[in-house]
Length: 462
Image (tube, rainbow, N blue to C red; front, side, top):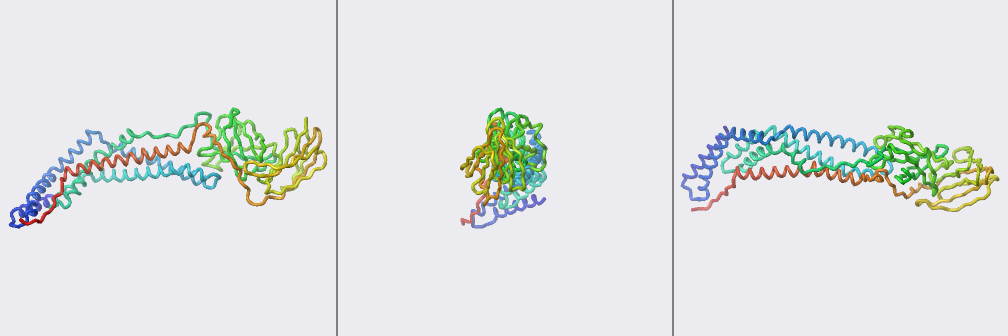
């Protein structure tokens, strides 16, 4: 009724301007324009039911289903919220681990992509709720605004009508548009063998942690991974891009202070030697406890006492800083060798049975140190004593270029995560935004058709 009243008012004002004896031709020309606009507004008001019916018929004819859009948004929102919760938990869990900066750099693009996608879905959902719930009211409000005289709100009114019609019919086709033009990248599964995320705990023959170990893994005699550990001998082979073989046997070798030692058990059988643990979740779910039997004792990082394979050793610890070794060689000459960083103070003593003594320096992955070798003849017994006085300053981490098991399998998680993030942004941010822009452009064009050009008021005299 208000729209009809405004239309009648505009018609009367137009008739009055047309008949008034005023010396402004431009103003006088508004008379017919106001009369035409008012008639047009009356037609719109009287045919509003027909317009709404035609829109509903067109929607059904084109199979424009709002239920499809609702399910599409709900599924993707739930999926993204799950991803966001998982990524947040993983990010919090790895924040205190060695190499957390690397993990964060891998996760960051995916986290941002998920946030952008969620923001886009929330925006589309909000627009959809407005259009679906208030589509009729938007059309009625548009007609009302178009009925205001002198075209003061004609442009806004025509856009409201066009927006309601175009989005009510076109927005439910968003899922089909996105599916037609998108191809979501999936993270490639490892091509063989399977992957288990785990932790390796590296210990010496007495069960003490070996600080800052470098662990090499071999599958089928070929190098499969290289990982380094922390000061407590903990090697993280966990999520997202490291891993250990899950159903393939393999061997581990310890590289430490310039020496190599096979780690036990050898070979590692995942089904037998992996132990489930919640301590490192969600980064790792299993723990592998390994020993280096050729390293008799490692009381401090970068301090270790090695033996050859033919040496039988009895060890006595008076305290953590003093060690006595009774060593006997079998079959051939063997040795006991002490290696330690230059920043550490270690003293050694021996009482007979030592055939020869050799000392010198070594350099291992940026670590400078000393070594002392005590050679023991076959069937000879030697008594050795070592006193560990501690180390000065913070230890320097070994320079290691790690090789992940996932990468060895041909699976680069960094690039795959980046591709996945780009795919999420393309499929769930860019394409929906493009479709919304298209609908907006169509609405603008239809609004121009409905509302026409805006007249300019002129006050030129006769």
